[in-house]
Length: 132
Image (cartoon, rainbow, N blue to C red; front, side, top):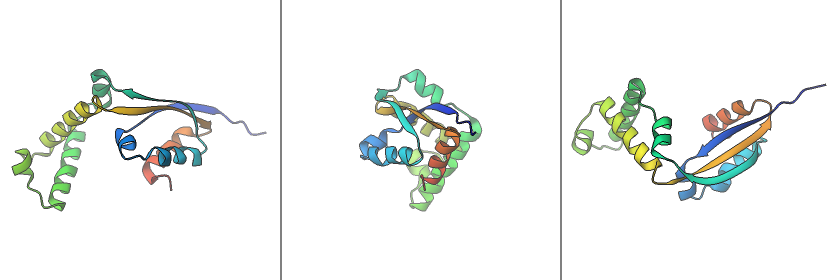
């Protein structure tokens, strides 16, 4: 006899899902992964929640800044001219600040998902593979 453990987790769906009308596609991916939506509502993040979610980490800020610089170069944009710096850590910190400000001004979708066995692995797979 195989034992099945029912698990639950909390997921926040980013605001662009609502803005770009991707709601149905996202939830179809949950359903395809045998995840059940137990609760769902739109919420606005508080400043405190934004600061907890978007923590400052020097190495992470450098990586975010480097990625932004790469995207600027790819689009032939001058980061120094547009942002006043080419320092990846400073750019990463600005992106962090902008993210915190943005997330407190828009609504996100809060979901409680449940499923049998390895719920977290299923969610990671959806995030990394786009659900394919």
